[in-house]
Length: 385
Ligand SMILES: C[S@@+](CC[C@H](N)C(=O)[O-])C[C@H]1O[C@@H](n2cnc3c(N)ncnc32)[C@H](O)[C@@H]1O
Image (cartoon, rainbow, N blue to C red):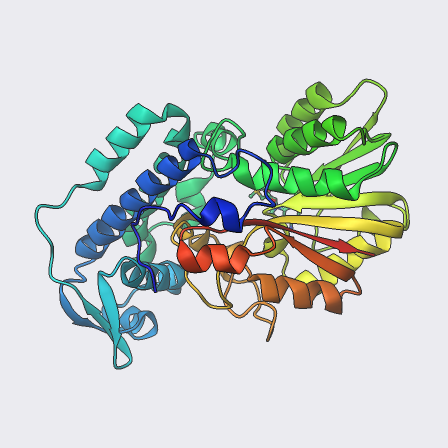
């Protein structure tokens, strides 16, 4: 199995040739490679800060009670050990892990980050978020800080807008891939609903793709759970929406019946969300609720970070592992086998159990992409009501 960091294989573009042009361009590939190097350095430094030295270490479940660490850090600890393995810095031994001897000289995460931000300043939010999480993890494990407090608050709102932004070259491909899938599923005059619209970056990408494809919507329902995101995202949609289209902005919780939140059954032609549906407590129920909103033959598009296998680690996952909503999402056999992001197989089964049909994935060979480059996770699923 390939290890990170690596030079992204040149045949990745050919395998994912169905993606919109430019998504896997040289700039993105180079930015990914720099981020991969950074995460490896960061994971190694976090392990050292937690006194997880070379030699045999227990699995995360056994480490927590042994060190008297908080359950709130359990998923992050599992992420750490498995990410070290993804980088060839640890291997499974018995029920635990053997951590490698330090290699010298090592480039520090600070040096790696400085070089990456010099070359691509717009990628800085991705580095800042990861650095904050790595710095917070020891305190979260000691039970002294909540991940939510480390990551969210008035001081970090702007950081998240910059992270989930089309200006961030490490995040934008999620939106471009989902936006293209929305445009393929839509027709001129359709009614579009977005869930978990955040600061509006997915809406911007989808509206650009819709207009370019000649499928300008007649109505756009922008929804989000958090009021501050809803306000910011609504402003972004107002600026991106063609003049003739009607905008409705609504606070919507995907864990609740949309009928009780102001949306009528059958009133939507295309519903989509980018990196939101994996947060549902019960993704099958949330998908079924969205299906009920669709007109006959209507489509659902999910832009999601796709886990390469049902329980495979995702090296970018650290920030989300610290959040209770992500960590506590109930597991469902065959659908969500590990908290958080789900695999293509898991999503396909969830969509089918929610009554959807004709599930398509973009790129179609997303699992092969991840097999040759284990830092590749972008994708979108489209399904019909
Ligand atoms: C990864 S962000 C999505 C970013 C967004 N698509 C964009 O383009 O900026 C996930 C979003 O889901 C929202 N969210 C979290 N829990 C939710 C829930 N139960 N219902 C609806 N939205 C939720 C968050 O507030 C956040 O804005």
